[in-house]
Amino acid sequence: MQTKSPPFEDLANLMTNAFGAAKGVSDEVRAAARARADRIIADMDLVSRDEFETIKIMVVNGQEEIAKLKAEIAALRKAAKAAPKAK
Image (cartoon, rainbow, N blue to C red):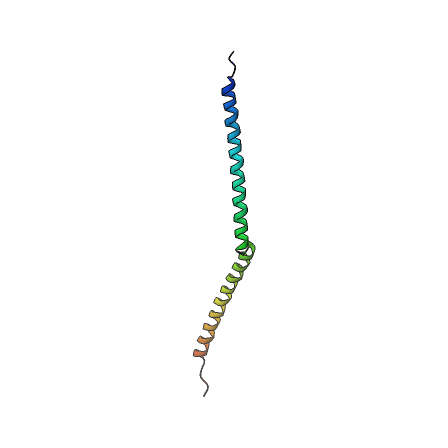
């Protein structure tokens, strides 16, 4: 039966620990970058998704109302042209 060589075992442990440390540093850098990005976005005073959707609905409703009013104005103008003029 073969046993592991202590120098190779030490090297394997060292490599395992190094990879674990690198992953920890990577996680810390990612968390710091995300926190910084969150602060930048918060400083930009952007609207929330709910606010955007509310305004979007208001715009669509306003456009529909404008279209109705334009049609009503066109109908009134047509009726005014067709009506006999008073002397």
